[in-house]
Image (cartoon, rainbow, N blue to C red; front, top):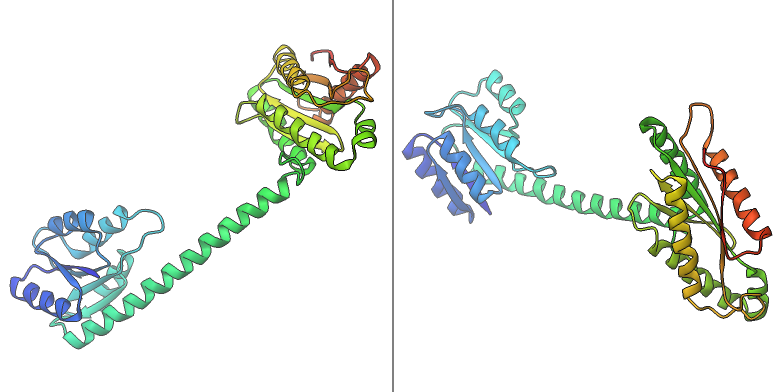
Length: 313
């Protein structure tokens, strides 16, 4: 344990240093405020014994600067030392960032008791912080699980609905376009019937991964919309940009070379409907999704394994 001892009287500093070392801790002595701050910065002690009266400043200012130097989540106990136990000094010391008070001359027994008390508080605080971090990590994992599709690992429908609302509002604020791709695996029911649900699940995973690889921006969202259907949100994307992404995705699915003997193409393929819009103040994102869905239906009607676009708006 390292204890920073800040005392302007050399005799008192020597006495306190001896007490600290008797306790089994390492004393870091400082005779003024600037020296104390420099030593605190370089040594990061576990406890500070801080005299209120110092030659270059006062202990209150030093305590405030120590608190300003600490990183979020850090806490170093500060015990003020004063010859006169004035209520105003104690109140000001706590307000400045102090944690306790010792009258001078300091009793070695009382100092040892105060140090042990602060040690216990530090240990309890560390335990609470560790528990809090574990809870935060668990909550983040729950959020991830609740927003992900368990089979494919991409976002689920719930997350998609939240994301499209957020991106729609952002696009409206900045007068940007937003695009949506609706993607459907062609003749997937026939694939399941021919090869079984286990093969069907593996097919879904491969298709989801391929779609994700070709939506490279952090702001893009890939979600399993339902069954064999996937949806992609492309912020700040025109209909022309959406068409380029959709064609890359369609070709990527063909390049997987997943055999589908009961399909006219002989392999797994994807039909994609795309739509893009600049949100107004009275149209919901549902309009964009519906437009992309209609374009997907047209792609199915026109022979599948193709991209169809809605009219740009």
